[in-house]
Length: 481
Image 1 (tube, rainbow, N blue to C red):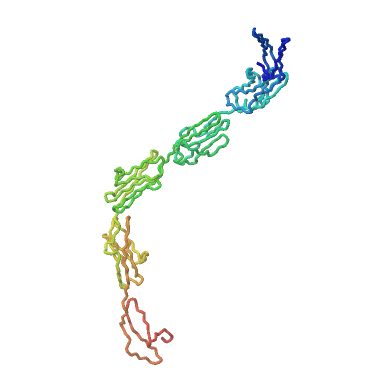
Image 2 (spheres, helix red, strand yellow):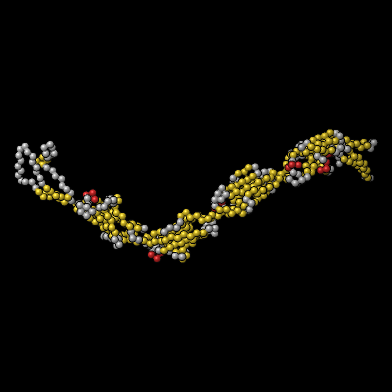
């Protein structure tokens, strides 16, 4: 029923039986349509109908959105709700160019004008849309709507061509992709699940490069690109290998009897090589006697409590499936040099001018080499010093015509691969006391004005110095003495 609440006033003239409906301010949406007048009394009802058409200029009640997004190839419908009578005609525009009416529809129930944009693309469909609505009473124009056409992610692999790449250490590696899409995709590069940074990004070209690969570069590289419309990903697996590179080869070792001896080998390779040790061609396993260890790129074999049966050739075989090599070395068991004397020091005296010898006997395995020092310095290089050795390990230093300067400490140092020892002799040089062989006469006679010669002779080592005296005074050379 129409009531004052809806802006309607109803009057009934009882005398004339006239019913009157008044609407001071008609509203297109609220009042247009069929109006029914119903009369009722206890004996029945009577109805009469009339159509109320309200003329109004177009009025947009629901505007176009300011922005709309769709995916390339996916249809999108633009909608605007308009009131107006008679029903307005709609003209749609794309970038100010009129649009043909075949994709324009009208939903009468909703009073909604619709524009269907079929299979949109960036080139043909992205831009600004608007609609002008017009009838006999006026016209109105919608707000513009900017349509953005999004495109899914597109991955184009530039390099490498295969999905699995096998490289040797030191070779270059590069991943290169062209990545497109709208909106611009977010791109990530993961190595074994951890993000790594691209070396360069220029436009759509994304590059990750390693000038010289190392073992740590091996892994699975996953590239992920996402935008609002889609996500794409691809994998590249890098396998890195390295031939064997021996920086410290196996070498012979000399071990003190009863002590441990260790062979060391430093070898870089990838994958990590398998190492097998042999003694005289018999494979060795970890045991109390033999300890096999690997620490990073250093491979070692320790022989505990070395004894003479452990002497021999040790061999190591290295193989990482890519390359292999082997090395051999010898183990020698030795005994430290020993001085075969009650004490490794003594004193010795020699008369000046005479020959003398200093001897020390040494033992050891292997036979030690003996060097001699004089007061901590190498022996003088002259014919008076001579060193001889005998099979029993005795080393003898011979000094001819001993001089006072030969006095001092003489050291014999015996050295072999497992140790060294010293023996010292303090050499003293003794002289001979002066002795007069021809003495002065008890009484001397001289003639005044003539020369006089007085003679005596003496022996001694070293040669004695002679001092002449007269009374208690020493005589010094002058023009008359």
